[in-house]
Length: 288
Image (cartoon, rainbow, N blue to C red; front, side):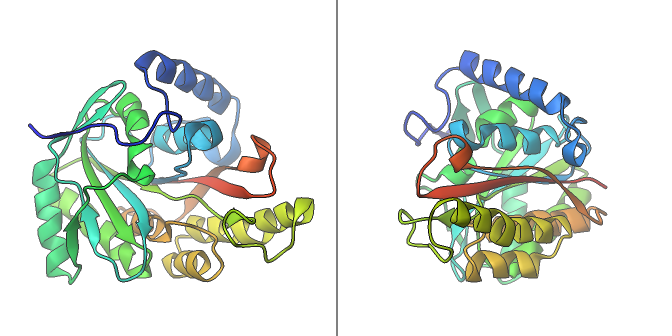
């Protein structure tokens, strides 16, 4: 059996199951105190969007997204990003994925069938054999939430057409009689000199601009399930680094009968580590 070992260095997420358990218990307690976007009620979502920074910055929001999924899901597709427009859909070929909490098995049958459907729909495909945080940081949380689920690891290009990937996956799940969910992975605006993006200057004025003028509009586009606007804002305004993944979640949700998403939460790296460069993070759930 080919098992993908952890590729991200220490610091992205804990090294031990005990540390993960402690963090998730704390985040779960915090979530149950909140009713923002229905955040106090876990489960019920067929798709969700989670941030993918190191857990110190965005782990609590990622858990809000992951806990919205059905813990009894048989297959969870994790749609990562960092794929520029025109790049192929990248799919992992391993049989299993290592996490500190234990192994997550791949859903090889679903992945093969999805690859055939994608190829038939005109998508280029490639193996995903490189280290990338967008999928890997979600796996320990999925191991906690959906321990028996099998995983389909893919990364998609930042195109509105990536919504079709989600639609094809939802249709395939119905044909196979598989209880499936899709977790998309994207951060929001990367602002400041570290990222070469400073349209609103510096300081608090810049942070306010990022939150109100860049991050909120893209989160609202995700919630109203507008993949065209989500990708446009991501590509033209730098409002999302993996907007194609969000489009895939929208497509999966729409094909599963969802009419609108709910914003579960929002934060920035500035709230954890003040700096002249900062990143926005959001979580969205799609419930029928």
